[in-house]
Amino acid sequence: MTDWYSRWESNKIGWHADQVNQNLIDYFSKLDLDNGDKIFVPLCGKSVDMFYLLQRGLRVVGVEMSDIAVQQFFSENKLEYSVAKVDDLILYEGDGIQIFCGDFFTLKANHLVDVKAVYDRASLIALDKALRQKYVNHLNDIISKDVRVLLLTLNYPQHQWVGPPYAVSKLEVDSLYGGSFQCQELQNISDIENEPMFLLQGVDFVEKAVYCLQKVRM
Ligand SMILES: C[S@@+](CC[C@H](N)C(=O)[O-])C[C@H]1O[C@@H](n2cnc3c(N)ncnc32)[C@H](O)[C@@H]1O
Image (cartoon, rainbow, N blue to C red; front, side):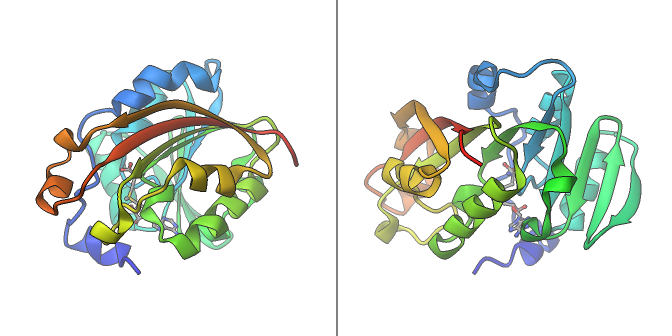
């Protein structure tokens, strides 16, 4: 299992992007959000996408186990914050943004009151197969009906590389979310040319997909 704490301590955070994710920009409208709406970013790291969402006028709530990541998010974006203990989590709160520091699996529905959408980039695919269904089940338990999820995944021959990020196919997305969510595939492109690490490992293909899911059943 990935030791995320030591990844943050040793700054081995190759997944972190300095630029806002282009798929988030391109497909933001699919989330159908209004100014002031609240969006949840699970396993958020110190993603600059959260700052982009704030700038678009949304309220943002994240969860992240590493306090290094959370503190770096606030300092790198020059945002002031306060810190408080909330249940088993530490809540870092700034203007329009809350990040719960702790285990995603201890987050409860009452921590996500008014959440209208979820943004999942490098979160589901950060988890090994055994954890992915648990992650989706828990997400389903803590969000309300009608919430939309913008989900970004990668797929590649899993036997050719160990992960994370792990390969998650359309079949798996359908199976993970199928029971309670409607699923629309927005994009699925082959893009190994822009993935030097996979090229170096001799991986045959890399597909990048974007889905818009909507919770239709309680
Ligand atoms: C691959 S990174 C992706 C971060 C972010 N979504 C991004 O796009 O930059 C996965 C993150 O999930 C965090 N994480 C892993 N398991 C977690 C858990 N059970 N609860 C909270 N955070 C977790 C790790 O510390 C890491 O920062």
